[in-house]
Amino acid sequence: MFKYYKGSFIFTAICLAIAAWLGWGMTGALMGTLGILWIVAVLGVLEVSLSFDNAVVNATVLRDMDAVWRRRFLTWGIVIAVFGMRIIFPLAIVAVAARMGPIDAIILAASDPVRYEQIITDAHVGISGFGGAFLAMVGLTFFLDEDKDVHWIGVIERPFSDLSRISGLAIGIVLLVLYGMSRLIGPEEAMTFIASGIFGLLTYIAVQSVGALLEQEEHVADAAGTVARSGLAGFLYLEVLDASFSFDGVIGAFALSNNLFIIALGLGIGAMFVRSMTVMLVDKGTLAEYRFLEHGAFYAIVALAAIMLLSVRFAIPETVTGLIGAALIGLAFYDSLRSNRRDATPVTATGEHLDHT
Image (cartoon, rainbow, N blue to C red):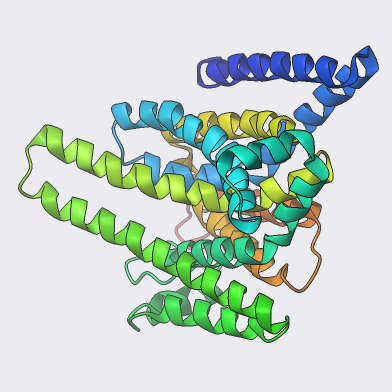
């Protein structure tokens, strides 16, 4: 078990050391430094709890990638996750929203964190539209699959599986939801919300198209080229997926701190553990052993997408988001155990299961 999390613990130690240095520089006092360390630790735990469904979905993609691309996911991927999504992405939002250069955005984050936080918060409508639309497509595509033969909640999943013959149904559903939510907010925000949602849809289509093109080239590639191309397509998909999962976490982190660098350290720790968890799920074959775990994760994705889209009109606490995802995955895990136990129980001549317990 430790081999999967060794890098995460080392990364955590480094981040906590940096946080202590920052805390001492900001407060010059032991209690202030301990307070900063506590915030970083809480942010790390929060990120893990909110992103467990992300780890399960990542594992569904990662299990088809070779060891080389798995290592790249844990190295290049963590660099993109920590520095790209937790530092560069918020700075880019501030730079665009405030119409300033990237250097000015960094200076603003360091010198006036309150205004920096306000700019990020004001961009919530656009972020929710983009992330909600992308995640909705990820979740709906899983259920709108005519080849899907394992169902957890059959009364819901079977009809969706049959409806998969309708071309573009998932896109139509997301567009209708975007339009419906836009009617509940002001005209200017509605325009931003719909435009961001459309870009979320286009991003999903673009990622899928790149994957399809790379898979098509596999038929004429040699063995080494095939692995590289498959890994690249999966890597791109995972990074966009991680970005979409991170939107809410980045914004919600401001409830604990408005310092960009403290937020990046805390969420970075969580992101590293999520990646280690993903690789462990793949190596141990957990998804195959617990057949409904994947279903629970995709239900959690649909729930997260709905919460992101609804949040432009209604205030939904981060705690609710985390609890819904954890509950769905927990129920899926429990039902998987029951199903495995039932399959392992001997059957009598009358078709009844014998329970030796």
